[in-house]
Length: 376
Image (cartoon, rainbow, N blue to C red; front, side, top):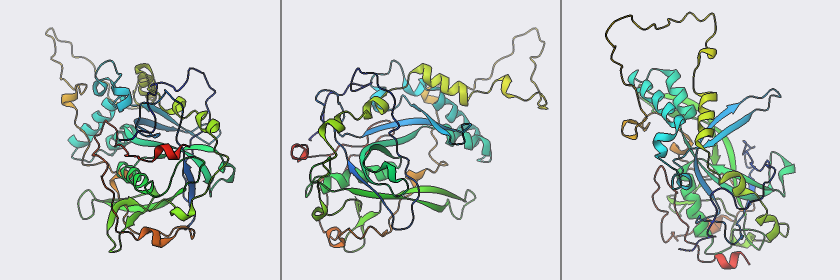
């Protein structure tokens, strides 16, 4: 196995306190046949990386908060079950995350209601931990916002299956052509589309939902079968250099400073207190709710245990929630005219598949044999 870099510090790649930059690029729906186009970035600083790829895999809890100016912000904390957090966590991360406990409590309530309690289901889906892979890129073309062109940004893939295919596709593509940084290499492309899908069709749990879906179509073989790869990189004859991607520019990009950082217990509890916990102050004065009063008895009243704090009591939601990564796309999608269709009609298959993932660990490693040539 060849690794991109090694010995990264958990909290930051440097001791310099930097002003937070707005590096995240939110992929938005585009017109048909319009694509975002990116060049992958890789880092060369010598002793600050303990990952096998330049990408960051983590689990997060998020809350969209509307601001007074109408723009809104997405508040995020990193769940301690994330691999790079868990290995340094003092305690049991599954027991220690109050937001996971809250989401699980709502799932149990939804299940106990016979799957009818929509409020509990909504809270479970909103606050349950979500996977995201963060990808550092140079923006070649942003069809929705031209000022992003030529800048270093971060995009995310939240579909675990799609991310595994993306890693496999990088490995496969690099056998023929480089894909990283400013040397002669190829770009990759993707788009976002608003889709409507039916979940659990023909059952009592059937429902239809609309959502934005990242489109990176499957690479099909000559018989029309999925290969486990994606059709997202330009062919080798479209490789070209980008002089603007310099070593200094890439190494100074604060990717790890902003995203490879563990949330503390205090930050997790503050998020829980702010968005999950209900207090008396949250209940309107005119709310006609029955208030429970302790019975006046001489004998102590036995307390019913409702704790879900122990990992042995936690019931994971494996039947109800449907996220982007539950849906796969196997149909061909039109791509830029610059793409050579003959390049993708290959009988070749990747030598080794990406390793199976676990819910609390890294998705897989990339076996990169040409990395030294890429970074020259």
